[in-house]
View 1 (cartoon, rainbow, N blue to C red):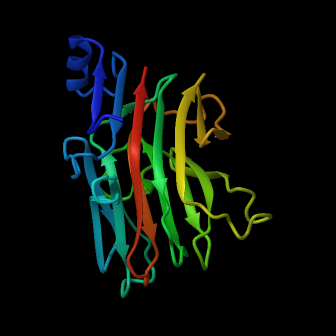
View 2: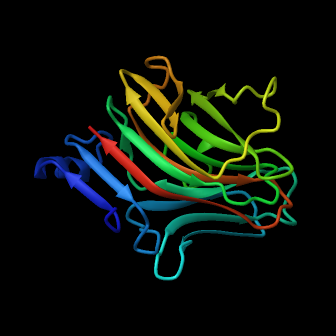
Length: 249
């Protein structure tokens, strides 16, 4: 992989249309984000935060060995001593919307990490047509692919949910609560979202996990959110993301 963000644009006309802020690109667009600059690029990402924290950070860190850098986006939350009646959210949002036409594909690598206690911890990839610097799940339309911690250790399960015009539905839970109550060990998860023949498909690694019915998700463009949430009274915990790839036809 070459270092830093890479973009391939079709023509000057396509770039001009993007500059006008249209929700759908007129020319093919490809982006790869590996955070190799060692910092969060404000022209590409905006921080989001909602709730009360003892301490929080959204930054790029080097998780590699000396001489072999491995830059990642790290979301970190310390919620000790905070209000018990709130769930806290933080993360980033893409600065521009992504076209979600047939053939569009987004992939993200999520690092769950060695959680000592994953209770009330989530790491999520969210698509929403609505821009916010708060919690995207408070908007009226979104698709969420999340890993939800299962107490008391590092296990988690995948949860997929959809919200359309204010109505929220959970569409995949790995069988919970009837089965898989203990979750499963996770570490580095490859999550993909693809639009194919009017359907949104969610994948994990090479496996297709879920597909919407055609036109079940109505928005044709959306912002990409990379999110973490935690309940109150947990010491600092973190989730990381990298290798974000966006292909628009």
